[in-house]
Image (cartoon, rainbow, N blue to C red):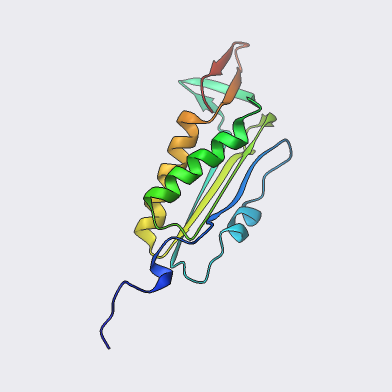
Length: 153
């Protein structure tokens, strides 16, 4: 039997954006992972962004995220761009707002595709574009008492 790539599972799903949200409550990796489950997906790439204890050579004690009211709509627009360029079976992205501590989850994204390389590529594109384009801002509080606002998440 000759193998071909014309199986429907090799293509993007009809409506692959399964979960887009901005939340004030703790994020769940399990929720995002479950959202992208798809029997035709041979690869699921998941990225979890956490609050680290340093930035730019300074110790970070805490930070807060805030967003524009259009943040979810912009996240959906970004997700749709990723879907247009990759054979995505399922996609999910959730971002936290409010006050977070070191170790807290700030963002969780996942992409399911027919193959692992496609999943990695689409997931990286999703998180990179969210970071640069979504109207979500980070307010860092450093151990020395200084503070810094960072443009987009």
